[in-house]
Length: 316
Image (tube, rainbow, N blue to C red; front, side, top):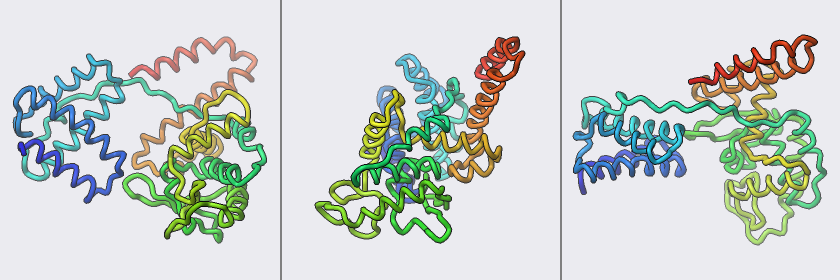
């Protein structure tokens, strides 16, 4: 095995066994490092010690010519920086060459959210049958507590505490956090649990018992949840494409509008860095600005200036 291949293999094992990263995250690192391996083979760079910041700039430039988005390029550069930082800590390298390469800028896109009326319409449907009882409980829990998709599918029955109406979820990096469950979500969950154990499923799952199960009695999958949300949205009417993260974004945006407490929302969402949470302050400002534009008698005189200000904020 060439030194570089062995170094990458050791790095991936470190991510899997010492940092406990998810399979999805590991796959992303593997894809990004595969582009480095290809470059190294083409230029006969058998060892990471031979790779310079110039090689990495060429790799990013190649991605640009191939039409990769700025976000994809940023993720790739982040993977390379983490890999070389690992080698520097292990004493293989004296410095991290990827640190000398600037990430390509990409315009920030505000996450799409539903307004409170749209949420109310989406959840107004009375479920018929156990599939819809489960689906409504999932929807209510997404919006009530701001769960990620993997946090919902990974939740177990034992994670719910009815004494204080909370749910314990496991997020990125296997970090756990305790989240409140809203009143409507509590009702929907109890309706679901009332039928869950009496289901005519084809097999029973072992401990720990998952909170949400499929027709076969297994833990429900991410793709199944996404498909069920699409089906629910179609039956609810309208042309919205609702996905789990949209409900999470709506949870954060509506909570910020009501409380203004960004730190609390950071904790509820499980963001390691508050800069990630700050995107919702832009959403909140959009809401305030739209109310102003609609309600203020002289707002029409300021609309042009307001839009110019927003455009200027979006410039990297």
